[in-house]
Amino acid sequence: MMGGNVLAPGEAAWILFGGFFALLALRVPVAVALGMACLPVMLIEPRLGAMTLMQETFNAYNSFILLAVPFFLLTANLMNVGGITDRLVRLSRALVGHFPGGLAQINVVLSFFFAGISGSSTADAASQSKIFIEAQRREGYDDSFSVAITAVSAVLAVIIPPSILMIVWGGVLTVSIGALFLAGVIPGLLIGLVQMATVHAYAKKRGYPTYPRANLREVGFATWISLPALMTPFIIIGGKIFGWFTATESACIAVLYAGMLSLVVYREMDLKALYGALGETGRLAAVALFCVGTASAFGWLLAYYKIPEAILTGVSAWGMGKIMTGFFIAGVFLVVGCFLDAIPAIIIVGAILQPLAMEVGIHPVHFAMIGIVSLAFGLVTPPYGLCLMIACHVAGMKMGAVIKDTIIMLLPMFAVLGLVIMWPDVSLILPRLISPEFLE
Amino acid sequence: MREAGIRHAVHRMAEFYSRFLSLLLALSVLILVFPVTLQIFARFTDFLPHYIWTEEMARFLLVWTIMIGAMVGLKEGIHFNVDLWPTLHGRARAALDLVSGVFVLIFAAAFFWYGIEFVDFAWFRISELAELPLWLIHLAWPLLGFSWLLFGGLKFYDDLKTLFGGEAP
Image (cartoon, rainbow over all chains, first blue to last red; front, side, top):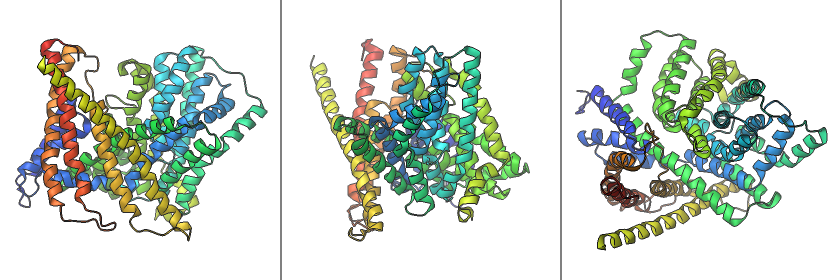
């Protein structure tokens, strides 16, 4: 009996985690499973009561930081209906279309550009599945390869700034979001490069088609028409670094900019498309954020019973060094990422692991990058890998059919994750060079 | 015959209600942009008034957006779940959906019941900056409970029909 609670921490942990996983297995939606696991504990504990669930979900939604989520989704949707994406496809084709497996290379490079504008991998997976999977099918690519590369390249969106995960991480665990934005650039570039190398290897082995090389004029023209869109990351990240606006405001600027390009510059969006983009944004954002509420209540209960400390004393006793702890953290996030969406995972697990990382002296920004990259990989790992689920859904395939190719593509990405863990400078060098005050 | 008529009417009502919610959802996403834009531009220009309530207004709008979207999400079945048996269909699927449906309904009932208390609790309180009545925001909780009971209940009923009547939903 601790602090006058009815339940001992161990009992509460069993009800919370046991209830959650049992409900997940019964196919109860994740958000409901998290909330339903909290309810019995709150009802048993006379000091809490079910009102705690109402209050904690309210506190979670009543957050200026989370506003960035609908904004970044809206930016992505406006890009798609407003002709921005089409122009970036053209630029990607001019740049890498002549490589072996041209269309799949374009798929990766477009994700890279997209990542610099949108901060949402699910939005990337949804839009690129529609663009590429059918097109690659027609050009004779294997279905499982097409689905896997579309899903796997979509994870770049949360690693390359701006990123919803970085904003949530910065807000929940009080780390400078500007520093996280800068820290994501090099890991993102590296992951993009190994994905292109993977496509190259596949294309050589299976003889995937290629396009004729674009001449300099075409490259120049494609760059010129994409220029307004390519400016977006500089506006968002620059605005954040120079302190012109906050992270959420930068997401709002991205919406305004994408809206302006779609309505005024490219003029390809009509009212119906706008309504569609707004509805799509509302659905995706609400479903993702509703889960944040119940996850916060779950995390709040864990903290109430001091369960993280109990787990940590066990782990600290192993006496791991910096690098081993880094691998341990990545492992935990990778496993959790298989079952949970990234945002609730940050809220629940990020808070549990932070003291462990601090104890061995891992820099908070470095810790964040290990977590974000690992959770990004979780977006394509079954049974709960949102990007893979979306790509499979568009292609009309079962997840089981694409797992093999997905895992093959993940292997070189794991090498990059290893590099991020062992060599903190991969993440820390840019923030240190550009704005060292963020690392204080 | 009579039963089928009632069922039809309830379905149509739910359909109408969810369309209404969809419209509200799209509108609320659009409206979200305004207070934040105002907040940014007011900082860099002199002619816009620098309101203190823009941030709070944006947060409350977000709360409603999330709750309305979550209501529509249940109707459309887009809340994420971990599906260990994705290949099932017909009666087996209906049976499994009934199991998860029970928990969704309990959750909805809890939000409805305790949500009313949540509204009552905020009845005389106002927000810190914009001084809005707080119950207006808390109202989203019992409303979500009600909407989920309606949409979830209809799905539950259809699954029961599929399981026992062999009737296609």
